[in-house]
Length: 240
Ligand SMILES: C[S@@+](CC[C@H](N)C(=O)[O-])C[C@H]1O[C@@H](n2cnc3c(N)ncnc32)[C@H](O)[C@@H]1O
Image (tube, rainbow, N blue to C red):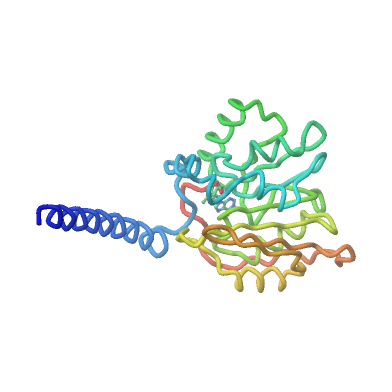
């Protein structure tokens, strides 16, 4: 009888703890999805570097799938504090470089610190907005965005910019996680990229989401001027 009572108590405690955790997560998720708007604040950058993240986002495997390789010039759009950047810099080696464009100065400060700690000299933080990339036409071999596109208000303009800076034949890769309040649906991403002139190159599932890869056709016509929508710009702390 005592054993049964103990088991019941334990079940109740676990159930209560799980419910509280779920309620806290849901409140956070709803606030992020519908309330705050704009990029994740730099004050939350630590979450992106949590060691448990390796289980859902193994950087070596993902960057290999993104096609990041020796000697390339790679655009990492929205690097945050650099969870992927260290491994990306290692992969491109001495002859390559990673251009890390982020709209938040404070994220880039955190990134710079991490790059210094790891001696990742091939990665370069650049302040800039996805819809006005401070890069030349056809200047990068690869571009990747992990849980970034959903934070950009004008996605078609960002994709047009990505197309402009990618060389013909270059790859554009994304990873999305469905627990992220800014999650972009597979179908939405596919449609947006196709409408911008990219071809689907591959798709793979992740533990809590997916990766999708696109190619800019070799015979892509000259890029038309980027049309920006009149939607509101990212929150005020973001750089213009
Ligand atoms: C959720 S974090 C992901 C960071 C990193 N990709 C990772 O997976 O750890 C999104 C990042 O995208 C950046 N970002 C959001 N909107 C942007 C924009 N319009 N242009 C450039 N970067 C942007 C944010 O500042 C933030 O660093």
